[in-house]
Image (cartoon, rainbow, N blue to C red; front, side, top):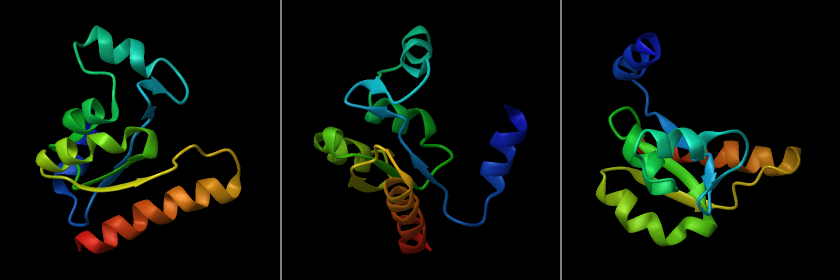
Length: 106
């Protein structure tokens, strides 16, 4: 999506992404199928590598914590926590983590 890429390239604030992949599987939808078809590693690290040109920070699940050094090596700041959003409180926790990571990157 060229317009989204342009907006991310022009962003003056830190951009933080939350991984949709947990433990090698998507939380919802066909992300793993699409990633495999594109020849990408289906993992939090694979998502980070795909987005690294447009993001500054990456939030991902504790089930993938061992990937933190590899993701940081991509030049990204990271935060690792339980990202499964089963209720409003869990969703709030993930959103707050993403915002806090962006704030640290300012």
